[in-house]
Image (tube, rainbow, N blue to C red; front, side, top):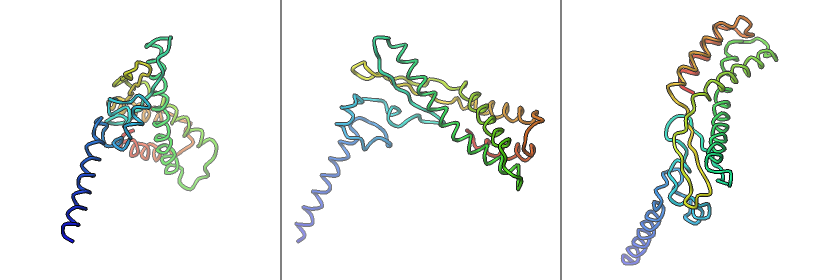
Length: 197
């Protein structure tokens, strides 16, 4: 019976080592380590940098990709950059929408939530997103081994995030037509933004 347990244990150990050895073949990083080699090969992602499959390392980031056609590499790069910035804009917009909506709710208290308040929240969200997108930078580029696809990593410059927050707070403080209790709104938004975009 003991020899049977040893054989089962050794079989499980060998299988585990084989799986571990195969999963780290391409050094994909933790978020993509379960992708099968055949899927990587089928999508021409063998030897792709970790960020292609896992995203950026810090802060807010997005990835865009484009086919490299007869229009050339620069055209494909611009297309990939536009797609990455569009995705980053959506990510930031969703995050900011929640922050602004929460700040608006805290500032109006028990007052009725009317369309003017909603429009004001949307306006502030658009303003933050547009100012934030100015600070996006291309951080990395990768082209597949067959030269047919380009991947671009775009990240938000964290130093700009603070400047954008200050600018938004100043513009709201100067707005005399805000349909919210401005002091409460500014306090709530400041607390929310202090955690970063």
